[in-house]
Length: 168
Image 1: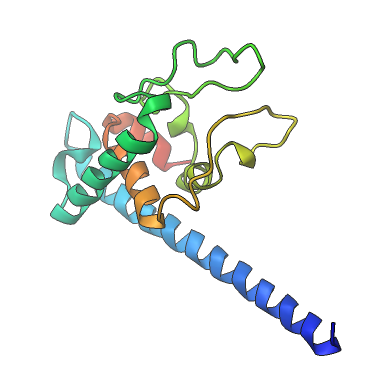
Image 2 (image 1 turned 135 degrees about the vertical axis):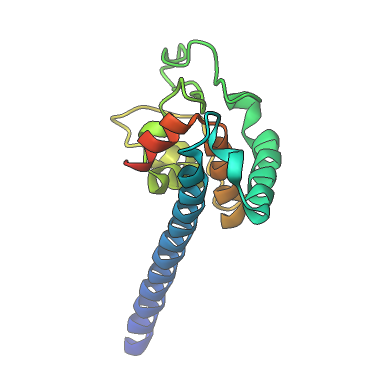
């Protein structure tokens, strides 16, 4: 390898990581804006956060529902209920799919963690934490689809859960 080629490859790799970081935080900021829009009006709403969504937000939630039903519901349930006895591991020690409704722990995490969880799947876990069968979706779904899935999940939560999750 010529002397300048190594530096050029390192610079290209660094630039790629920088772009990925910017994209990740851009998507996270977009989700935060959507969630803020969902949460803010729901302060005066007794139901879930989807009561006062704009047309574009409703479209995002509808897209998310379709993507969720196609890619997530087989494990996490069509009503976000997760697998039975989800807190107990399978016989091989791997994690079961948790619910994404208010009975689970999804809302205990901030949006950045949730987006990363969808993108990287179970591979994001350190080996000391456990094994998850959740696939990575970063090369299957677009960032918009991943954001839409999270918007759909959060649109199903009661206002108090949305409020609690927004402080994470």
